[in-house]
Image 1 (cartoon, rainbow, N blue to C red):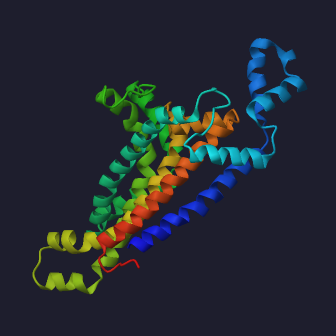
Image 2: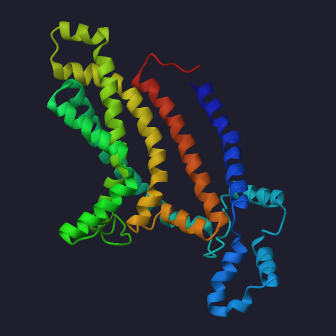
Image 3: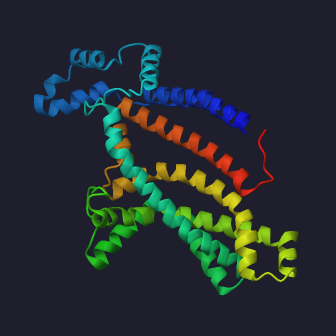
Length: 322
């Protein structure tokens, strides 16, 4: 086990290097000059005459984008190794401070979406498998098909529309810390979490149903039933634990997808999290902010994959790592 953990940890290094190179190069290739964006923003107050080649060159020198791409990349990587993601071009604040303020909001929203999706999806998938081809099974499959077919941004827009149209109410804008005002915090994040996790719920429910049906066909399930065990004991003690392997895999993958999915949800519901911060940074060509968000998400996904692999050995003792 220790050897496996060491090997997987060492694989982080080339993977992260590849991620940093890709995001760094793409930001420099796509159209848009951060120096020009900053000069244009200042031009609203200073007048159009301030946008000159000399002013743009001075701004590039200030930002450091006039240096070679290799030097910029080396400086950025060296800063990350010291947990210094640089200064935001647009807001002129340390990127790490912006992430400290916004990342807990996105993490809370993602966890809420994953928790409610799992709490609904697993029982729904189990019931559909137990009552296969019944009315309840057809209803559950219809819900999951709709959840997979409808994108979460459409669900979010429809949710806002109907909340305003029918109830003349919309979730409060902004964010209130859960430790300071739990009720208002839940009002702000409850509906965004539902919109974010709906497709996740549908996907996990389908995986759970499929895994349970496969397990029900195994010999040990028939043996347990032949010994006189009740259906509840067969499902909970024997079937569900073994069926959880693919569900855990999907849930881990979905957690990373949910983190990325918060981008559009936070914009629609005006949640001041990392997703909205990323959109604003991309719009303003704020290279340090965009790079920091992408790298942090990559690290989270890599760590999560390792944790999931280790959980397999606990869920299924037949799995051993050498």
